[in-house]
Image (cartoon, one colour):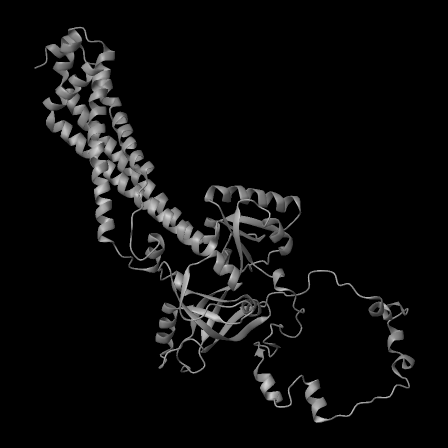
Length: 520
């Protein structure tokens, strides 16, 4: 082997121009691969870290849907399919709490609302907002992605809205408010629900900034879950059996419903001891003596068809009575010890759902991120196709250069054959030359790629739009190095060089000694 290596190095020196051309092609190829793979790895890592740490967790549990679902709703054609409520929620939560790899959970309902401000001019606005309905304490323990700059974070049981600073600035610009809105101001949120449009007046209780700035993510506003339920007209009907006491069922044992309303039943000697005083009137209307019926009406939220719901969360007339909030969540978000554990948790949960007949499903963070992770996959596919095209072109160029090199060395190779060199020796010699070029110039290309990435990180290219901010996992691109991608790029170019050597090697082995020695 040392003899072959010395011969290969001597031959490369004798054919400097050809060796340099092949080497430069390989170095550029490695540099492109290193830079490209690192940027793709940065995008993947950035999106994964941004969504897992701040919005989706490692696992998302939802009700069953006909189409794919993300944290932003069902990805159905036309967006017509409604996001289902998680069935058997309490049973699922109890099971999840027993899983060993789960470190925390949070529940959520998601909605979109049209925001208007009463004191704004009629021709100003409206503004579309993305609403994350949450349990404040639980959600903030799992996702520490915001810091309050004014006001306070939502408290358990409190109705209110916390809005990003950039969202506040945008709304002030759209509504042209002077002074602008802030903590303590109330906004009107209108949203389409299953029973028509619902309107809620919600107070801004806090303004936040993101720990990791992202213009796209700052459009999210966090709101109490019950308000989102009312806005969406979610079915809050009782999902369990109602147990009645013996006294409550006594009337049902009377034989028929007609007997309940006959004259003997309805009439009697009972005396009505009731005087219609002012206090009794207000008592019937459930008002304090100092509050007028008009004040009471003003405290209710009216739907488009004239129905109203109380501030306490009671839905419009004609809908089912409210039940505990635990029964009406669209998403349960889980964090696991690591991403590998997430795959095990998803498999275990889906098997458990199937075995117990529960119409629910567990998804990974990519499904929860929806269109954002899909975009990253598309970018990766486009890049990989581009790399394949570059590799094909590089192979063709290197192959042509190697063929020319072999043709120019016909006499040399023929002489070696005449002196007793076997085909195996010629094969090993040519292959060693190509391998040596690939290793040396591939290493140079790898160093050049790392240098380019360090310069990119030092300069710090800023994202010019929200989409790039998501890809960069922040406002500035900071490449995330991967030893596997760097070394892998080097190995790929070595393999490409050896593949490009196949055809020239066949030509070299076909050289006839007598013919070669007679060639000038």
